Length: 346
Image: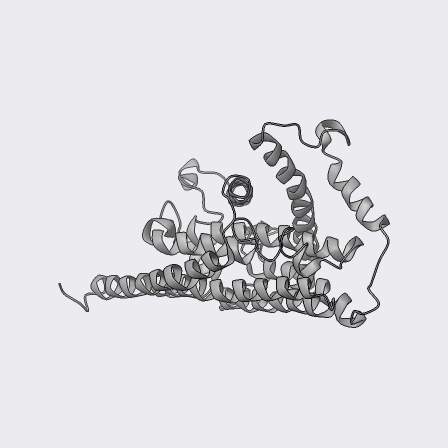
């Protein structure tokens, strides 16, 4: 790797990390404003103009709170749990293609940290490690409510990963690649995968809600049954890490959905405007983030509109509805692929 490319990669990594944290931070503010709008009340509007400094005030509050580790807790694991959760949430952004390429002094720079040919498998692997952050936190607290919340979270995430994985298998069968960047390029124009894989998209979207522990699937936390769930004993920034990781996961899930099913950084009809390559790339990045913000809003809209499931309803939906539907989607995609390649005749 050349020196200039190394500098660009380091700068890009820092920029993506900063953007991820800022979007996650202001998602907490947006969530409260959306909730206030849906419930016809006034949201946070005191800290700064229109309340835009509220996330900073919340951050200062989290840092200033007393750090409490219960005497009966396993202290090493108690600290490790939220650390794993936060680390895995930040690592998933590595393989997401945020834009095409920028040409600077005649040299091309890819707007993606790592273009590996198993991008989808990488995301699934990292998300699976994130389950350990929840389970370790619930176990280390030595609190029965925390442990039950962690068990709920683990079983929920593992159950819905199966259906999510099957929906991705159908997408891989159709596109013939595991590289997210290659999938985005194949959707150039309006050839978005959502038009060819509507059932797979619906399954993936529902599973993304469950993976992020968002309503109607936020069963690991329940004030009436489990107090705060797996983070009942946590306070200060260790609790902040758990809460912050949820918003980062929501941001990354929105980015993955946009990249896999809605064309990523592709803009319809942009090639007809005869703009320079760099301008097209920048507009593509802006368009990609507009799609991401739409899905973040959708996550919030659903949370404050639809009631929660019971735990048995949640498991029944995952195992008895989504998993069979995802297998059916794989079979239909296989038949369609054979017919398209002329290997199968009705």
